[in-house]
Image 1 (tube, helix red, strand yellow):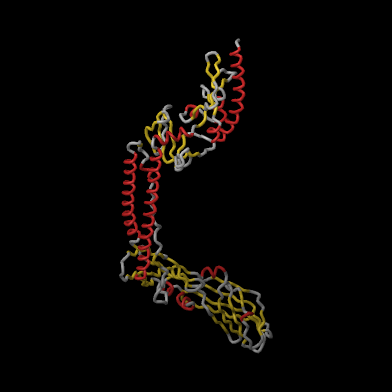
Image 2 (cartoon, one colour):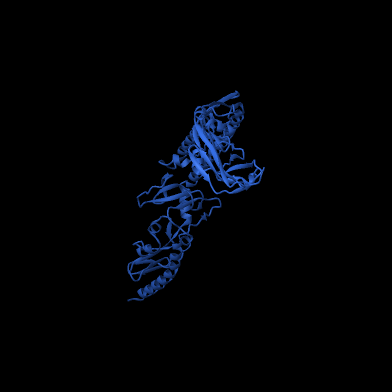
Length: 495
């Protein structure tokens, strides 16, 4: 082995070690996959910045523009690279971070398959036009027929394959962007976006103004509409001449309709180039303007239709409670709509019908029975009790032994009372409450779907029996009395 070969091998080994230390940090940085931004050397030049993508530029061999699309489609051609046109600038269609620009990545003829498993596919990077070999410190070493660039090129001693250091060339990337006039394309795309926002804001402002004007007119006109009620009492038991319903006009207007414009929707199935993008964009603007004009007309028609009528709110049926004993089932035939009539007095008539009456606790409010010695006056309470006032007509003490009530064939006994009453005395109400109405009697005193004719025909047998003793005689006496009362007469007592 000659001296030149030995020197070359030593130099190669030193280079491989230095390169290994260098690329170790490169790979660690590449794994983070953090996007970065950088400015070109020109103060007002384009920026390398990822973010919201507004279009995709398809580049033949990475440097010649073929077409631009608003929606990404896979070119399925290794010779075509894609540049993302973003709101902030431009970016290659793969992950690039700061380390890839400063330190580079390691590439080999087999695309470094081991590293692919570690931090992602670097095939795109290694084959990309925008990644170049850094030869600033290049020194040439020859080993046999192999040419090696020191510090930038190396040989994997274990495999004998080339290891190449490549880094993202920002200046080259931005030069390609400028050369293919992508800066102008991006500016015009952003102008389309501004026009889209301008139209959206304009129709929003006009819609709100029109909506507000119509709503104010609509609410003001409602004062010209009045609701009146007519009454038809099918039950014949209602004592009033009218019932006031709870109906009202619905002044709640429907929500404001909104419109949005999206220039990208017009470019969805369209591609364009340097030569025709201005005409394509102008066509998009005209289409958005036409849509705006159609939407404006649509909204005016929509508002006119929305404010065409008022909705009548209110119950169609309900129970009108006169008191805890009497209620009326009421129906109302209100229209669903009252149509808008500008500056004209409108009366909405709503017929109200009392279909029938429900009666609860129809027990006569007073009942009296007596003989020469004793008198009992009974008044029912709302629950199962009665207030039975006893009057002693004699000069002796009297003891009330029991009270029995009768209601439509049902009997309720209140036995073993043994309440003593002094001569010529009337019992106090507070000391005269008895459970003299059974649950069965109470249930039978409730009537549903009653009208006047039926109430007059329905007769109720009602009465009481009382057993008492005059104390100085030790003889039990009793009084028993019932009578028939019509349901209508009892109902009259509860008005």
